[in-house]
Image (tube, rainbow over all chains, first blue to last red; front, side, top):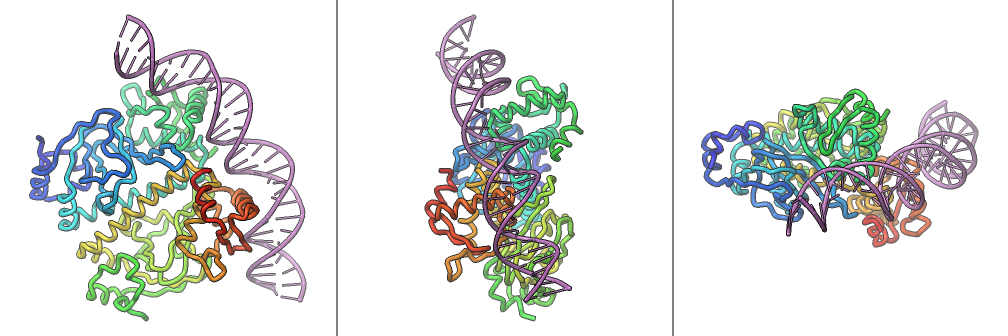
Length: 228
Length: 228
DNA sequence: TTTAGAATATGATATTTATCACATTTTTAA
DNA sequence: TTAAAAATGTGATAAATATCATATTCTAAA
């Protein structure tokens, strides 16, 4: 079992503010898990007993609407923490997390995290900053969902995905999402997402083969995202 | 000038976790402000030098979309804190706050708040909890905006407004919003909001005279909000 | 009090998006 | 390897919503 104090991943999140001593304690109570593609890390309504530190892989975090449709709220990837919010508010999770590919995550029990939050101000301040940032992002998403057309949201989503996941050797965005997942990110019907993707392809703004999507004309995509 | 240690308002927010000593210090550096209806407490892009504790009145917190339309993100009222997020993330505000009626607010300088956040774990934990709660709410709004129809969102908004502001002696929701404000909360064109309000009135589900809106059939409104 | 400007209201129409139906392709599992 | 299931794609149509035009009512400032 790898040790937290030697783990490079913590440099990417708030855990970097923990002391050596705190990390050693954490090492002793944390467990590693392998999550297979398609499996849930946790489900809506579940009471989390700790948080997850993503060592490898990507998962989609989503929520069911009253209409019975799934809305993807965020994609969580290597280096991110998952589940802090439910822990802090001490409520059942309002979200579900499903692996998009095989994942490796560490589970850190609630008590350990809460103790560190209480005792280590620079850790709690970092979590606070993270949350403030996430909240700002959420505001932007609300505005986009409320005010932008599906076409604008699709263009923006493609740009965001490329910014977050980068591109592989073939210049394709380095994450594999189904058309349904894409539709569930932008909040539209799967058919609509497919149609608009085909449009963008026809206009040579993007290219795709299956789930490999690449951006050919980033400027044009930005223009579309802004509504022209 | 009233004193924080004697102020009842702080019981409604995280400031209740401050010690007597911390409150006395705060009293000495805080200032009171009167904000007239329609005036801004702060504007998008402004760098806040502190946070605001709302003693009386209501303001709308909004953000301009790239399409040039305004989206109201939240209504902030008596007892709420305003501006913590920009302070914590140490960035210019992404939001604008405009008074909906005459307001009385206290301004607490950044240094004072940050010091308390660092030194008082029960205060910072409370702010953290607040933020986790706000984030959960934001998730719900994202899902609603992405998945619900304008009609559903209007019904839900009316129910939310009544839950938050209560009703006056005439059974009308105790906050005055223009039709444009209502449209900017649910993310639709003003005309669409007006039309749907008229529909609800015709069906005797709500009644209104000018900006006084009352809910006549709460059950039916809940049914509509859920999409039937 | 009067009056211009703003807010509210409503019709006509265009645009966007969802839904349903079905064909084709890809993936998965026996 | 092959059959079944899932994902992708496309057309036709319906429903939701925005936009534009214009009328009416309300509000606030001179």
